[in-house]
Image (tube, rainbow, N blue to C red; front, side, top):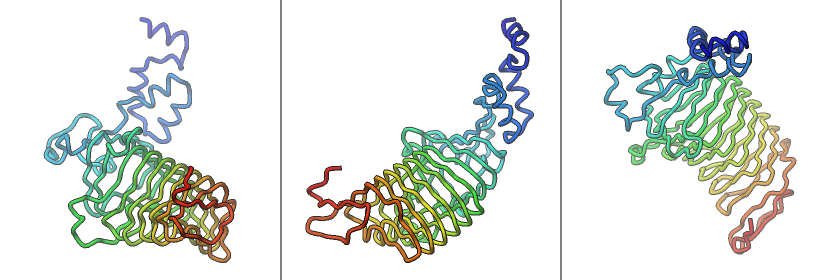
Length: 320
């Protein structure tokens, strides 16, 4: 009775939540349910109801052992299964635990959002063989991608951990991309792809770069760490642009940053550790400006050529 009176008083914006959710079940996530969510607060609650989220079971819950058994509504045994059924705009939730992904990896061909543990990405770990290939826009939060440890003694294969192509935009928050055990780039952006990444770690390219940008792609990094890569931490080439703010670069054997092929970068308030091969390598015709308020830590007794916008400090004098 109370719900009926509320609905009569508020017309369309007063429809009961249960009825709204039931109606929304007949709509596709994007654009229909997404458009309904902007009508009013009541409709947003109905359009974004928890029942629409797709859940993947971790191996700790026996997902690999029970692949023939049916699951509850919107629950799946593997990430690949959830992706194959998902509609554009869907959210796929990964609970705490491990998820095994075999060759050739994952292909994301419709816009999707993946959500793990927003407070600690180490709680949600995807053990990835192959690569994650983004061919549509997407969002990642609170997820760790890494190579299976059981493959560490085998011959390394030249796989990128993740790739963005065809002009897609993929944003990331609180993620870890660890390609230790493979010879490819950790992540690449090609063909005018874009991204905005916050508090994300790029780590462990065994034979490539941490981040490889080509073909006029663009990337913004805030409070990210790019560490432990055998070539450049960030390789920017082919008219690309990137901006790094309050980031950490260390143990990148080639250079922390390499800017080539008429590319442009901005590096602000970032920290260069003592383990980088070079700091910023800029090819003629490319630009690194503005480069401001950065600090580079040098081992005791080592000197480097001055770089505008980078203050050097010896290891024992570090005061960051």
